[in-house]
Image 1 (spheres, helix red, strand yellow):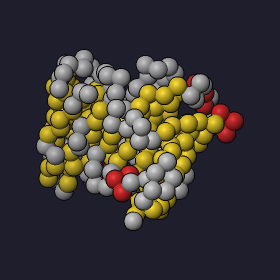
Image 2 (cartoon, helix red, strand yellow):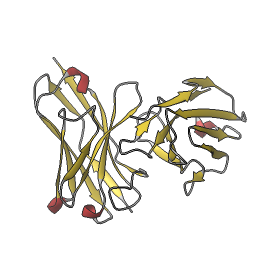
Image 3 (spheres, chains in turn red, blue):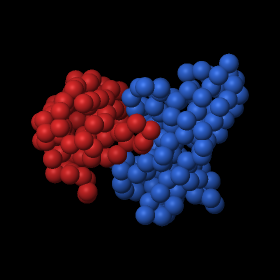
Length: 106
Length: 122
């Protein structure tokens, strides 16, 4: 299996802050990486595909970058609706795997 | 609009069997694989595997092979996740999800069900 390691596992931030979450794959996955946002009691929501392509309707304050084995999710100016847990997922492999998650708290 | 509607929460005892469901609508059910994802209490997401509703081909994650069974019913556009003998460690929320395109190589998951909470107690 390809292991996905996210950091940090949790962070505290304020409205307006710039937030960066990183995700490392145990082997190269090209650009086959997705980012999801999950709020308590809800299903994950796809934010970004192919490492940097924003899904329709996702605010432009979200951006993704990286390729190979190192990736980042950046929230340029944190908004109240952004407090949630974020997961990266590789879909390069026949067995897609998720990172452990990053909880963004106030 | 693509919708995946899952069955309600279940409370079961150790060793019991269980089947939960995921009904698709708003698209051609047999054209898209259905993926199952587990989320244990307070934990992250785990990809369990997927099933092709057109011919019931399956692809199980090694971690879940032999532990669960996927099936589908084309007549009702419903996918199922089945356990023959539940363990306490099966307590989790289970999500079904559909990829963005048809075919085995399509693995991006933009469409998700609301999740089914399974609680297994002694």
